[in-house]
Length: 363
Image 1 (tube, one colour):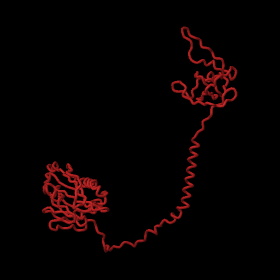
Image 2 (cartoon, helix red, strand yellow):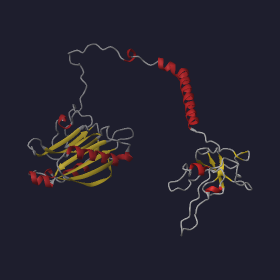
Image 3 (cartoon, one colour):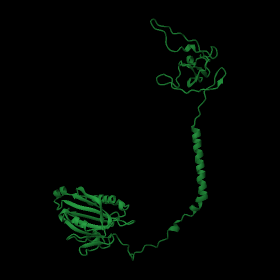
Image 4 (tube, helix red, strand yellow):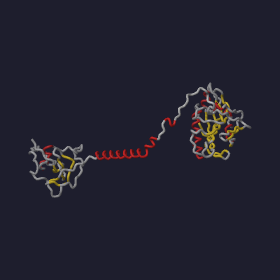
């Protein structure tokens, strides 16, 4: 039967010149610098460990090494073994905190201070902030918000009861996109009053019906003038491949920031058109991408070439390449720019596009 050693400061069992706290059951990480002139507790100052048998030295072995635990009076290690708390994986003591200036109690030192848990204070502070925020929000609601809430319109304030639908057609049906007829040539020129420009009509090109080039999809460009020529009828067994020159006001869906952004907008239109309207395999080449003037107005031209040579040879198409251009003309601050879109297959003439672009004039 062993005697329980009371909690207290005892010489460090690791052999360091300091004191370590024994909590009554095990060694702790608490250490204390030993004051000058203060020695180890004298024999009889604490519970004494039972006498330990001395190991018999084997013949030929050297003197025993390591700290002499039996030299420390009232050392709990003799009763309870080596400390485990705060010990590293390799058996060495882990780094410990010091408590300089701890109060002395009697002949020894007092217990180490306990570190409080900060979480209750943190959670308590957060709860207090939440309560304050709720009080502020409630005050604002009752002072400023109550009249606004009660003033919100009810369904009867914003909606009137409608009579049952009639089977009679409306007297003034709304205009549909592309319903207006396209202008016809006058003296060999097409004048687009809406876009504010005109151009020379290529020989033997005709004005198509408006509904052939304008649909009802609001995401597609609407044209207010145009001419066409057939490159190959039923090239795929169904549809015709045509050349075209169209003009109009640029659709609102394309971004436009003014004359300084003409180039960026022209590129956006070019990418959209070539992706949307040219499904046959082809190679694309940009011929020119630069600023220009149309009747003294700022403009931008992006001219391109589409090469269908490979698929044309395989399918027996009549055209191999197609020359096209996107031209944007600024119409002033707050106005949408005018757009000219031309695309001419090479079997309709390789000089047609150049003639159209050079003939552009303000209306």
